[in-house]
Length: 270
Image (cartoon, rainbow, N blue to C red; front, top):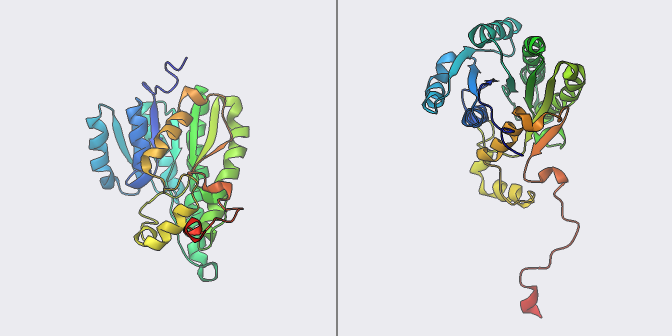
């Protein structure tokens, strides 16, 4: 029954923000499932090593320049992608950024940087690719969100607002584009170590604090996302759209104990 459901052979996936981090992990997982790639970054030279890695897997990889805060850059990238491969079947809308500050310290420019990149950029990249997917009557759009789209965290006001917007945007676009054979879903990672948050993981106390609130008792590892991105890109998810798939070890359950734990030495005291 599962034959071919997760096979991406013959398909092309475009992954934005693929110069490092989770973007590369998403691209790698899709390539291993059979897809050829178009990978983007603000600086094409930053993609050289990753392109070579994908080609070593026996897949094609085309690097393109993309600044998601620049409308012209988005339009040029979409046109170049179409010219290079004809049909792009899958979009992984991954490019994003964060400014980690207490809410009282967030500046006008901080807010605009995060929202323009994560929310406005996600919409207009999706729009450009969807215009082309419509012509083929097929598409898989995967917006990369975050557990912050459903859970509040201090110090992440602009980021949480942008990711909450991505979640809502996903539902709206799914409704808009479903009639064209395009599914739109949001893949929302929980706490994964990235370039943006690696400083937190340098604190043993913070990591212990985090792990205590994750039901599976560990932070996420990049490979934990592989199955989810392949699922949302493949035929296996053909009747799934408008959804946010949280891959977070369960932290979005609320992760607060409603019972009092006995002290570790309780038995000895008896």
